[in-house]
Amino acid sequence: MSEIATTPEPPYYAVIFTSTRTKGDHGYNDMANKMVELAREQSGFLGVESARENVGITVSYWQDLSSIKAWKANVDHIAAQKLGRQLWYGNFKVRISKVERDYGL
Image 1 (cartoon, helix red, strand yellow):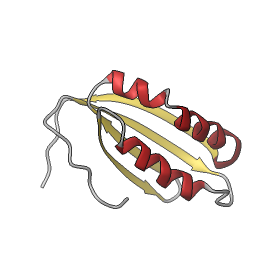
Image 2: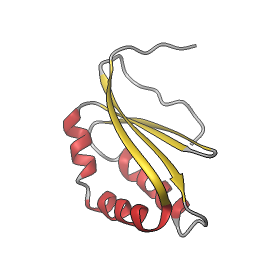
Image 3: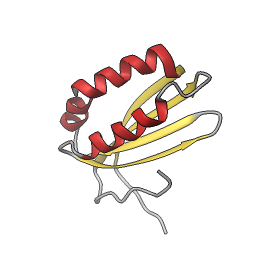
Image 4: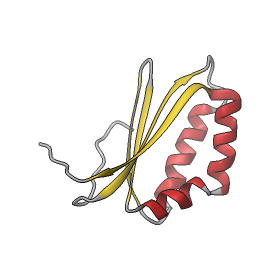
């Protein structure tokens, strides 16, 4: 994922996931790709952006809070979250914010 997400006119919501990884892949890249594809199928999903160096930052964009809640409750996403806690993340933080303004080039 190296492109900037195309989002509608605000307001919409952003889920900001920051993390530090443990050593080794342990299936992380495959699962990350699977989760992006699954998220794209969810009602209310608007787009995603991701970058990783020392700290990983993934921002997913959603139409409303109920869409975010439904994504959090997705069975496959719950399984990936469990693996993340067990295998992939040394630390992580989730922040949810309302986007009221955006602009760019």
